[in-house]
Each structure stands twice: as C-alpha cells, then as structure tokens.
Image 1 (tube, rainbow, N blue to C red):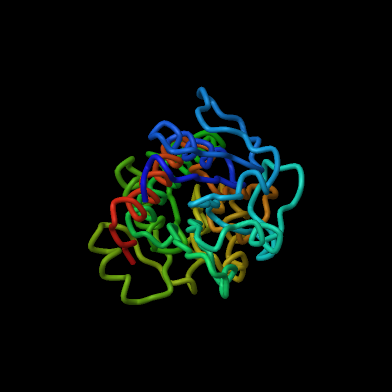
Image 2: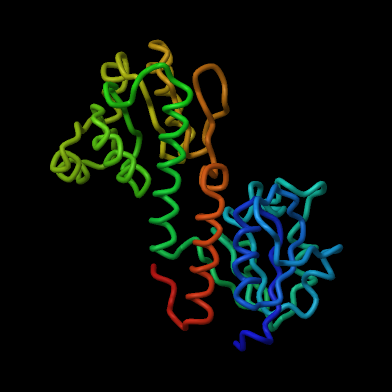
Amino acid sequence: MNINESKIAVIGGDSRMLYAANCFALAGYECAVYANNAVFAENAEYTKAMTLSDALTKSDIVILPIPLSRDGYSLNAPFCDHRLFFRDIIKFIPDTATVCAGLTGEIFEGCDFSVLDYGSDEYFCRQNARYTVEGALSIAADKSHVAICSSKCCIFGFGRIGKYLAKALDALGAEVVVFARSEKDRAFIEYCGYDYEPYTNTEKVLCDCDFLFNTVPDKQICEHFRYAKRQSALIIELAGVSKSHENIINAPSLPALYSPKSAGTLIYRTVKRCLFDKEQVER
C-alpha cells in the first residue's frame, strides 16, 4: 500500500481509537473518524466524518475497536449517540478494503473484504495486559484504605494479565495468592514465589484477603466473590463477568481509561506493522 494513497476510516471505540487515528494522520495518511466523541487531549490531525458513508466510501483500511462488539450485533461505540449495527457498516465497506479490528469472532464471516484481527497479535496482547495491570493497581491504591505493600492479594486466573499482575503486586511487597484451575500452572506459580490455591479453597483463603482481582471470563467464578465480600475486601473485576456493586469494582477496558495515548499508539503500531511492514500477526 502506498502511504500517500491510502484512505483510513476509524469507526467507533473509545479515546484509544482517537489517538490511533491521530498517529495515522501524523504519519501522512488521510484519516477520517466517525462515531467517536470521546475527549481527546491533544490537537487532532484527523478529520471528523459527518456520516458513516462519508467515512467508509473509497476507504482502503477500516480500523474498528477492541473489543469489536459487546453484544455481537452492534459496534462497540460508547461515545456515539446512536447504535451502529454491523449490517449497516458492512454495506459501506468496499470489497477491496482491509478491516482491522480486535476480537472479531465470526462477525465478518462471508464478507468479501479481508480482515485483520489485531487483537490476536501476541505483542499487542502482552502490552495491553501491562496497561491493564497499571490501571488495576491505580484502582486498588485509590479505592482502598489498605496499602498494597502490606496487603494480601488474591488473583483469579494466571493468563497474561494474571501473570503481570502477580509480578507487579509481588514487587510492591504484597502477599500474592493465585487461584488457577490447571494443576500444570502450580509449578510455575510456586517457582515465581507466589502461593498457589485451587478454587476449592476459596472460602478458606479469601477470609482474610484485602484485594481480589478477577481475570477469568467465566460468570461461575462470581460465586466465589462472596467469601471476600464478607471481609470487605476490594474486588476488582477485570474480566467483565460481574456488575459493580458494594465492594466490587467492574473495571473493563482500563487502558482506555488510564493510558489511552499509549494504548492508541499500540493499536497504530500493531496495525501499521501488520499491514505496511509486511509482517505476519503473531499467533
């Protein structure tokens, strides 16, 4: 693709997408934004499209948010005053365009245009996890009267976010307990110096914890929260499986809230690398 000839449309999403759009505009691409009225803290170099058709017509690259959708039918566009359904978006996307989106699932199956799921890029996932952990620590420090360095912190799950979170909490001096379903994680968790516990021990272990971080996208996991709630532990929900109430803080998309410029630049660099630098998405 020729940098001087590519037209980019950035549709929906939060403030991260505005920073990503600005990066493309500053790099010399013609870039239009639609369905995103989030606050942008810097001088905008991108243009604002008045209609969906204006943004997408003759576009070479269409960049959509991560996550792509919250319901499977409409675009994730929290700063738009109306819903954008995929059936309406798809009809304006040229067949020759490349659609870049995060966590696409089966939404674009059968479409003629090509699709790049930047949410599957390993470097992107790892960096995004680090930004999520920074946000989670900010919430913990701001919303609790307990110092992290002298606290007992329990983590549900040991995926990317769980691993980075455990490392950060341990570095701060917290007692770290990791709950994991897989016995194969036990050796690595204990090797890192954390305490391993199976989910069958939640009632016993959570009775004196100060912070509980959930990274497991499974609604059944919420059944264990009640043991931490009895002790007024602060529960930070990072997987979006429970609603905010009492001492539970629902904290999705933390990079957009705490580090939108870094997160937006990460989207820009990932998409640019995969499309223009001719590197394959890491799986």
